Image 1: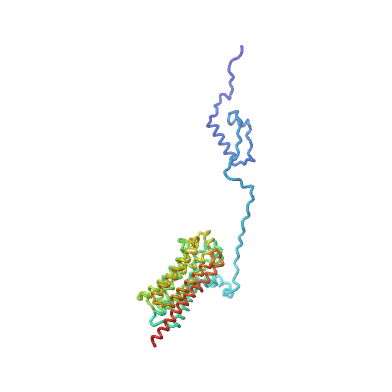
Image 2: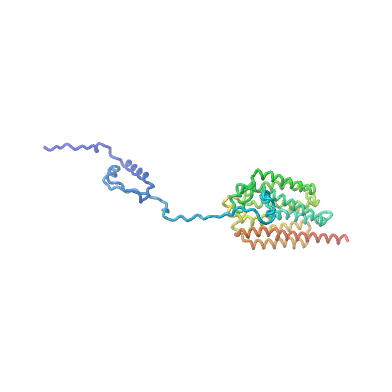
Length: 406
């Protein structure tokens, strides 16, 4: 009689893997080999698959799947090398004749780049020439000449002090801008501890010069120190730091009046004339410093420095034209308030309009060298035209006064 007892195997006594367990095992297998390339992936042996899946189905080969295209076979392009010019001591000009220890301080004052001194001096000259016919009696040429020389010396000193303050504020930014990376503090030729006493000496020299003017000039000039100190911060908080620079550099538009004995607070025509001249110089500063800022437009964007050049890059020429028109209009307002004649409008206003228009038309804002060249020319072109117009108006007033006396 045959043995009908069923055969009992040990595997039958073990619990069968559930669908969840099989799926979990698959996921663990994928996780272990997730970053294995297809060339390195090995097929799972059938016997191993039976142990894992408990099934007779042929096993699946688990290989890497990546959403990124393979680029390891493509050649890596070479990194461009940027050659930066190292610092070389000056071999020409005034700085070449100074002792070596003095050169970094002269560079800190920008003695080798006098264009900024001219731009600071010209508003003082404008206001002196504009105020001369309003003085009682009319200011003689010798007084205008002496006052102008004092103003130029003061512009040289205070522009140097302003540059020192600016470089102290920007000592962590200047090394990241190509044009400014070799400034004395940025390159380490002067430390901050050395620059601060030097700044104190500059401010004391400026105070000594200011005391050579009438006493009321001291009260008119003192508020400008706040603007000089705060200007370097403007490029960190506003896209229009050139406006703040204009408020600073144009302060001399007020100074010519008290320097010739005219009290602005008690003379309304003089106050209106000075206010219009100040606004005109602010607009002029925006124009020439916007052109200047285009030298650093790419480095400023990388370093996070705000600039009007970046803010108005899309319509730069239109913006420059608009601000130039505002400058000429405010000049005309200054002449109207002071009772100027045709020579003023033709020479001063007409000269400013012609030179500004030509500069805006010709400047190539994409060329660093051209921007620097027109920045320097602007002081002589526009500043010279305005000065000649004001000087002509002053001479006409002098002649008219002499004819009236006769």
